[in-house]
Image (cartoon, rainbow, N blue to C red; front, side, top):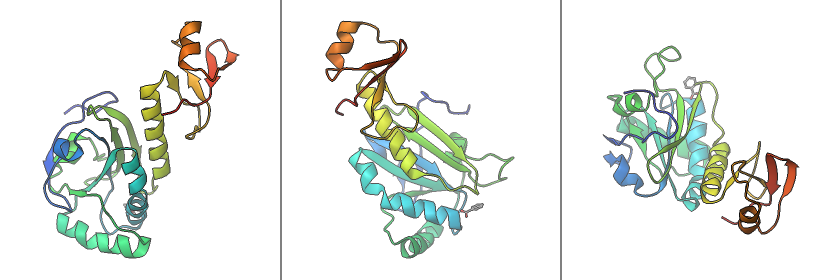
Length: 213
Ligand code: BEZ
């Protein structure tokens, strides 16, 4: 399997998990999905990551996003570890953790980087849209916990920019001004699409209030 790239179709799979057998496409249905791997159960950084994501789960669901975690540990191990996550991070883990013991999914999604960690998954994140297209790929080292607020921010940007002819600037947050895509040049179309008006910073750089989602 060649390395996945943005715009590729996310491969379907069937795998065990902390909540039983999961058929990926069936589980996600026509929603968005965040699929993320962590190196191993019973490790501290992973404990904080999975706990923080559990606390954000309603935020993901409000955006129509399913969350699925993965490591190469067993479902039994996941369920033992979930008790530690819940007691130390003061939350409830209400999303599945794939038990990728045979490394089927990690291989499909290229989550094992042998020159970084020989046999375990690194910290990968995939955002997959309702058409099953890969829209974001992140890879973090084992020693650095990820910023899951950033994952939500990217989802907000993707969902906004899919609907309107805009892009989002550096460090954009929901509600901030956005950028009109440079390919949109027709003045009358711009006025119709962006009735709140726009400011021309440079001929190729036009800023407008965020359209309603
Ligand atoms: C951790 O989650 O704490 C961790 C996992 C693998 C290597 C280093 C840290």
